[in-house]
Length: 101
Image (cartoon, rainbow, N blue to C red; front, side, top):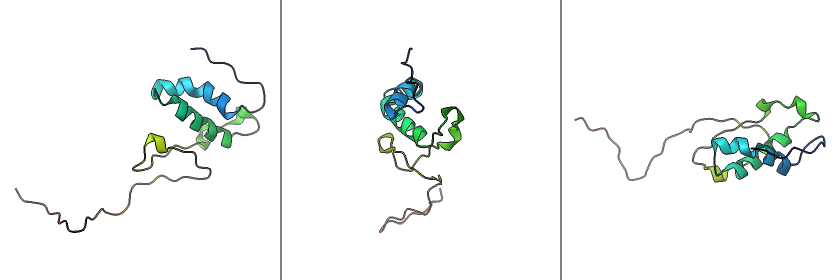
């Protein structure tokens, strides 16, 4: 697959970068490449240093939000800490017990 080359300017635009990375994302998430490549490009450009050769992939983090879906994905500027759910779900009026069989 041939992808158009990026412009020689110091930093590409979100649309240019998204077009360049869309084929890679399509190989793992077919059908969602347009949405995910735009998010990935936005996140990468938010932390891109002045010299793109110094870009570190560890500066972009992906965290699964419990109960969220792909369509609820978004870029958060700042720091995100992933953690498991806390607490218990208690339904009023219901009694849960373990039956001895």
